[in-house]
Image 1 (spheres, protein in one colour):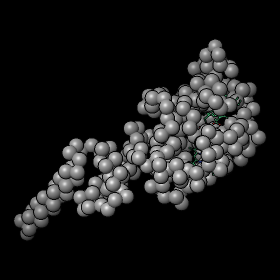
Image 2 (image 1 turned 45 degrees about the horizontal axis):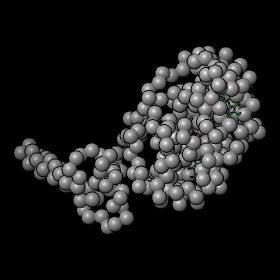
Image 3 (image 1 turned 90 degrees about the vertical axis):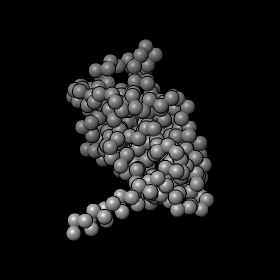
Image 4 (image 1 turned 180 degrees about the vertical axis):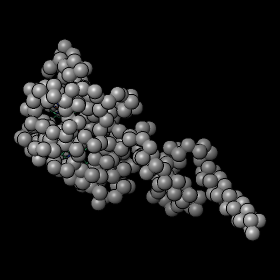
Length: 270
Ligand code: HEC
Ligand code: HEC
């Protein structure tokens, strides 16, 4: 009896090995990133059985990497998808974010801003497009399906001109600020654009809904911190630290603001 099981599992094991050998043959290194690129560039041509194996591996990897790391850098999305992504972008996003994706004050933010792309993880972009931002003008695009959203993300990432700081920003400590003090500062200098409580354009300003869960559930404290410190060039989001800044906030004050935003004050204002 146990012999039968043993033989069966040996057969399973061997067939399992030959499958992965097959995949490895396609690209001698086992690095998944490499095989991702290979697969996607061959997507359009007819896939041989061995390519199918590679394809299967790629699909399995995505949810896994999404789970283990909040953001996925280096990205698993094939940059070659950018061409297809541009067409999809024009069909679905250009209306609000503008044809060149630089956004329009009070309508939609810039998606090609270089400081933004240097710190925006693939998963942040993907999930924001997939889920939208409830309570704002940013609709969900679930219906497009994963592949098309990935292509759009590849198109957006293609505009990055600064070196990626995604890992460094993600590794930053969470804020331990004082939300009460943060509220005071936010009301004084941020709410004119972001709305009281950070509920965004609905309040008539040009700043996005930084106090609502659609944004907060998808960003790290590091992302918020760096954005406040450095701003986003050629948008109305200025820098709030340093002698040339609109207001020279201390690190502590910035963390106080983050602590306040983490209470999601914009949800109460909806
Ligand atoms: C109907 C208008 C509209 C359309 C269409 C639209 N967006 Fe948006 N988008 C917005 C608004 C408004 C916001 C800002 C929401 C807020 O206040 O936080 C936004 C925010 C975003 C953000 C977050 C940017 C940041 O600075 O954090 C991303 C990413 C994004 N949109 C991508 C897309 C993509 C990709 C598409 C097309 C698939 C798209 N949007 C289509 C209106 C739109
Ligand atoms: C003069 C208007 C203005 C002021 C004042 C301002 N912001 Fe902004 N902020 C913006 C705009 C506009 C954007 C989005 C950039 C774009 O439209 O492309 C933004 C983006 C942001 C983002 C990124 C949000 C996202 O959707 O990705 C954060 C975080 C933020 N601001 C925080 C703050 C904080 C905190 C303050 C106060 C210290 C502040 N802002 C003050 C206009 C402003």
